[in-house]
Image 1 (cartoon, rainbow, N blue to C red):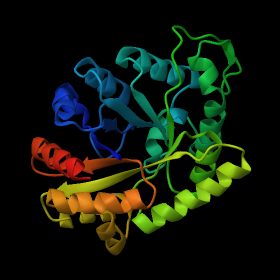
Image 2 (cartoon, one colour):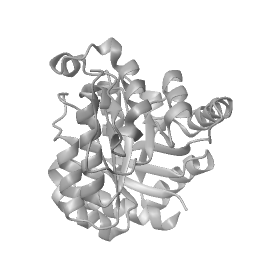
Image 3 (cartoon, rainbow, N blue to C red):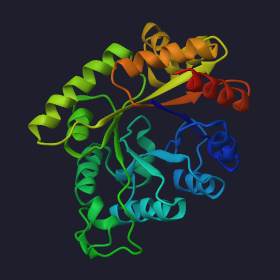
Length: 282
């Protein structure tokens, strides 16, 4: 059965138990140092959510290259330990807000290379082995050791697809139509076979206005992500739970096994309840 999760605002992390009680599969949080949207540190968000839940999966799309590699690994390992190994590690390269990279002292043009280099050594760092960090060249051993969480590679670009085939346990793009998603997953299947790896699990992040119309979310995607209005209209979940379930099912048919939703509406409780209703119908 497909897993259905919801994106968690940091301000609502203390209410994560409510989402768990609804029967949702996962909570996801985004990661930015600075953007045009208020965003609490992803590590603190998930640590808070872990403290008030027991079983729900806790996911994040982390810009690991924005941090020194040892600190990124330390944060991931700490979250695994605090949550009882419930972390789902999404990895993205960002770039929408260049100032956050400049503020962190990381050249924007190097973020893809830094991401790949850390992904190569991340399991060794997390498992507590003496490991040479790719950005400093220093050998360090992190404790306590923690199991490497499932790694979901975010992004839909050709480079992101190659990264998913090379390093990912899952592929986690956003804002694709079902046909675009199926095409991308087919490409990753071929790339994984060439790399001698198992095809990553399919996941997808979608935006939604559950119980309402898509218009406001479509305009937001157009403004914030420069997405053409006609494209945005095709990727926003909306309407009653039966309609939302049908829309999610299209992605399941395209190969998705895990769907998370950035639910935008007047009430976060109502959005979560409607999504849980849709999940029950799948």
